[in-house]
Structure formats: C-alpha cells, structure tokens
Length: 227
Image: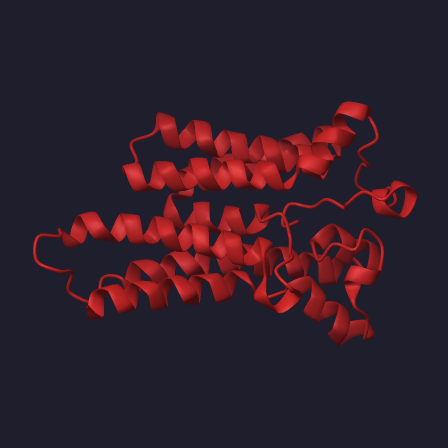
C-alpha cells in the first residue's frame, strides 16, 4: 500500500514541477504584466523574447528544460526508495515509474494547474526529460532542433522535427520498453500541441524568429521550443 501511495505522490510532484509557469512568473516579476495578454499570448520563451527581452527568454528556456530533467532525476531516486509489493521486480518497476513521471511533467507544463490548465507546448521540458533519461537521444534531438532552426528560423518546425528525431532514435537504440513508450507518447504529444502551427506551415504563414506574433496579425498562437 505504501508503495502505491508513494507512486501517486511521485507523479504529483512531477506534475507540479512541470506546471511551474516560468514565463508567466517572469512577466509578473519584471514588468507586472500577464504575458498571456501580450504578443502571442503564450507563456513560452518566444513570447517572452518579444515581450520581455532575450535574457528573460533564455531564463524561461533553461528553467523549462531543467523542470523536465529534474522530474526524471527525482523519479529515479524516489521510486527506488519504497520496496515494491512481492512479485514485482524493483529493476523492472523503476523504468515504468520514470515513464509515468515523464508524462506527468509534460502534462504539467502543457496543462498547468496555476494557469487554469493551460500552458506551453512542452518541447523544452521534453528535451529535459530526454537528456535526463537518455542523453544520446536528448543530444540528437537538440542537434536537429538547432540545425533546423539555423536553416529555417522557424521554431515550431524545429521543435516538431526534434520530437520526431527522438522517436526514431529511441526505437533505433537499445532502450527499455517503458522509455520507448514515453518518448513516442511524449513526442506525439509535443507535435499535437503544435497543430495550429502545422496549419500555418502548410499555408506558408508561420512566422520566423524575429517576426511578429501570428496572433496579433491573424489570431494564431506563438511558437517556441517550450511552447
């Protein structure tokens, strides 16, 4: 019983880590504004860049990556503490617990309890999850993101291709089944959170880095790796 209670508590901690609204808090702290009422109305780092400047945007990006990594590090430590029920292999349980914690932190970032269950697109938080779970996969996704961004200057495209790369890598490399399911589910979740961006990409109207917010011009959403 203690094991299952601890399991639920661990997922709650991961969700609450993800739900920390970094961009919103910086808007309040630095300018006393609700960043959701400015620019693209996103709490992500691109809107922070437009509204608050490059250093606050970098801070949002780094903190959101750290949120994802911290959730995985915490889960590995926390779920190794309580003894699982008889018949359950501790070495087999922990990867599945880590998988659930990874999904919880992504959900927390995208559906923050502090922002009426709204939030970002979870790509930066997902990168933190990948780096802490399997650094080769995280590094591969980061390299693809940076390369695509340098060529296209379109953050949403870079984020979705990085998520797709992570899915390919986790299937190609030797990883536990739980990790593979986490990366596949998480990658598809990140891509699904960019569905409005996909429409603009197909229409040729998706803004590039340095251009104005699509919402301010046509009612769309902003883009950035942490959404």
